[in-house]
Image (cartoon, rainbow over all chains, first blue to last red; front, side):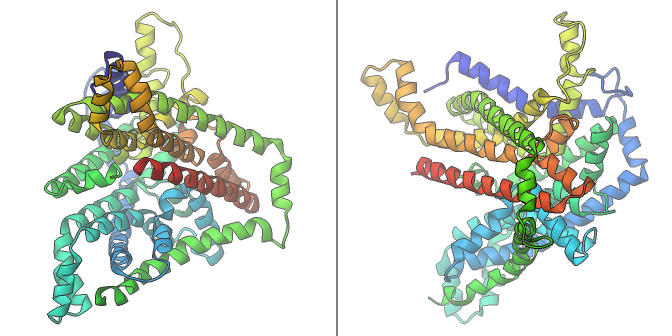
Length: 265
Length: 272
């Protein structure tokens, strides 16, 4: 059954509502005006120069990148191992533990932020690198467990059993039989965790102390004033996200897996 | 089976991290609202006695209801339209709906300052068309917060709803048509009831996510539209009243988990 004209119109307008702001920000970042005028009176790269010429922004970019790499690698290693344990293990409480790993996606981030702030303050780790990385791992690891879990579930368990029968140890089976087959999913999971950490703002605002990440600086500037430099940063963040999405699209294109995972079936 | 015997040990490293860095902090927070500095209900009493907290709760609740309703009103037609599209066009539209998921909430919220500001796209168009001679203030009020929140949360309703609509058997609609039902009746008496569980689940999901929303109200509300999360920020970072913040977080957590239970129940019905 095809949608009627009115439905199609509402659908298109809603789609424009969804996407338009992103397009406008990208357009504004190349504006030559010193205020947020639309349409821009002329084109220039002044806001990109202003971003890369400001050592505080560059420092924030370096911190964000290091934090994203550190936490996503930890999340990938721990999350993949955990996904294997949950899918292949046979022990009581598996469902409960799985729910525990997914919980950071459901519990409001502000509640996680408050809880972590109070706990880190208690043990004196508030504003430390260790506390910051740990909090980012907790928030990004559900994506890894989810994506890698789906991939392991669809990998035929009998192939692992054959490797066992032929005398491979569990570690050998995992590293030499299972992992090579999971590379596309592991790459997707890693990129998801990387983006989740790179864009994280709420928990970082609470627990980062003197560390400045790009989203944290951006948030603090936005609450105070509207500076067009932000359009350049926003465009860079959009470009990073679109590239990541395209990379995952390419990696999973042959399998058609991730899109299905993301729309929930 | 040999495979399963000690594969379970692979969950241990992550489990340790989650217990230390997530579970224990949450439990400590629950404890802090009743045990600090000694067992007491004073923090909860303070919360229930002062009208300001109730005003913020009411405000949050109101924005959550409006946001869910608007998401439903515009999200359902979008998902329905997407269902009827052909292969290529459908893939393109799904990608566009998926795109905002990947882009930082901060960026998407900021975009609305550019679009709705006094000198922004919408106001300049309205003035240019002679509809108004002074800029309309969309920002730093409830309207701005609702627009931003709706924009950010809409994909959470549309994508699962679209997936559920795709699974509705076209033959059921054909059967209704063969039996002489007019288009309107086919939609309201066959299609809509079949899509209802997924639709309801999506509305509950948007409601839950709005309750705990922080970034968008803080930026588009400009401090004038306090929601629960922004109140928590003030109680932790400015007052500081940690015990009270712990009590309010506990309440928010309980409300979220209860609603999530409702969501799971409805979503399970839609899957069956």
